[in-house]
Image 1 (cartoon, rainbow, N blue to C red):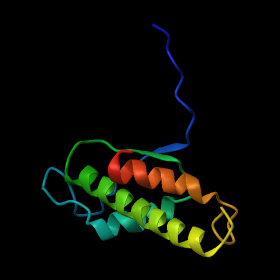
Image 2: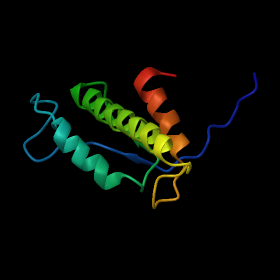
Image 3: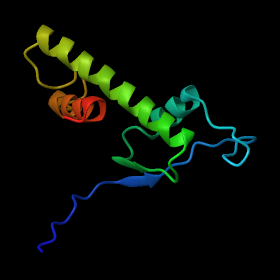
Image 4: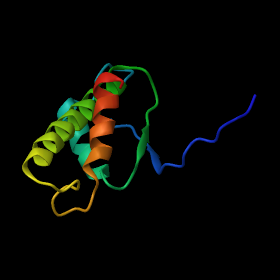
Length: 108
C-alpha cells in the first residue's frame, strides 16, 4: 500500500474554555465566545485541533461552518457584482473560500 503524504498546514491546538468553564462541570464556551476566539486566530492558522467530541467541539464546527457559508454567500454576491476573482482589497482568491464553505456546509 502506497502512503500519500498529507499537505502541510499551519495548525494550532484549540480549547476555548475560559475561567469558570469546564467540561467536567458541563460549562462550555458559548458560540459567541468561540467566534471571538476564531476571529483572533483567523489568518494565523490554517487548521485547528480540538481535544474531544463534546459540546465544545460541536459548537466550534458549527461556528466555522456558519462563517464559511457566509463567506461562500458573500463570494457569490461579490462575484456577480465584479469581474474580479479576489476579495476586494485583500488579494485573496474567493474560490478557495467558496470551496471550503461547500465542504464544511454540505460535505461537497
